[in-house]
Length: 295
Image (cartoon, rainbow, N blue to C red; front, side):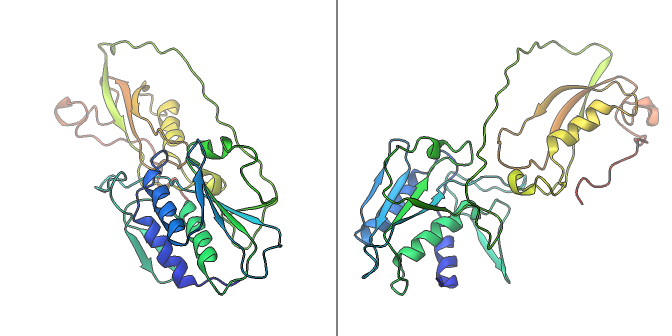
């Protein structure tokens, strides 16, 4: 089966113009419903918001076993600190550079926009002979497979499902290891800082980011362990205590840029013995600096 690559890329860019963060898939769902109506193919949503489009078989293939082509409607929405992109309303700005496609200061959404584009291009290509196809586009995958977990039993007719959400080109995986979210709750007690302590900010910058499932073996730095290592080890003897921090609330990306508040004993923080004895100015921190957290 050969798919027109140019048409595939055009469809992907078309989908990328529609905001579709997790739990905000209504606009993109309506787009696919309109697409199905244009082809006179029936579609329906289940109570969770998953969309199912029934594509009839090519002439002569009506008796062939049906196939489900499955992808998810939502995407990871992350951006660089300087980006003014609004994921609730702005289209993803897709940039082509040779054989590569990237986004301008944001995540691209190829996970899983490519699956959405490929499923529709296959379905509408008159040159491709195919059995009955069910396009199953689930919601809220990136924050816990919510849509897939709530898929009603018996909603699908086909017995074969092809999930188009993988990283290795040319590799088919039979089955799946699955996943599980773990939530840990602890009671927190807040108190004002001691008189002999002052606030400092620890930053770890320049990390690559990426999807943890696909990049967990690449030894890429993640902002929380990296900042936690520096704060917890306290090799300079500054008496650093984690006090507050900017927390990455997403479970999907490797976070790239931290902001973490620390307490240090007055007179012991980096630069505390600077010109005029002013804390936080003048002297350089003589602890060994980590040059890079990425290979």
